[in-house]
Amino acid sequence: MAAMISCHPKPQSILKLRCLVEQTSIVLDLHDIVSFGFKRKFIRNVLRSNILNILNGKTAIKERRDIRSSPKYY
Image 1 (cartoon, rainbow, N blue to C red):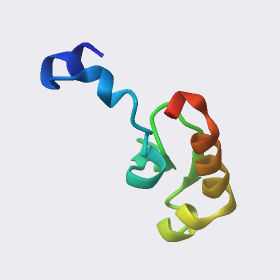
Image 2: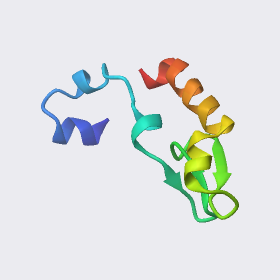
Image 3: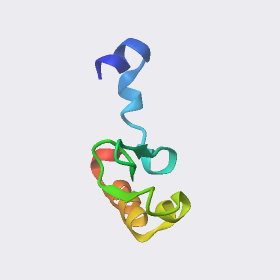
Image 4: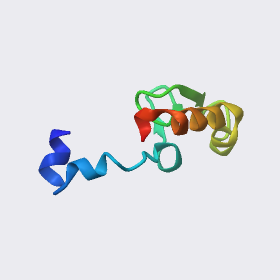
């Protein structure tokens, strides 16, 4: 929050926007595991599956649904 205050003129207005992490970002950790955020569930290892298959698979779809339904991401 402190970083938002220093770089954004109206930081509270940003907090009213819905988080789009499941649509705009992926995280690849040191063990080649994909997730939608550093604190989100792991989806799959990219060394064992194609990235498109990972992002379109059942686990990723469920994770996106969980993110969208969580009040934390609104």
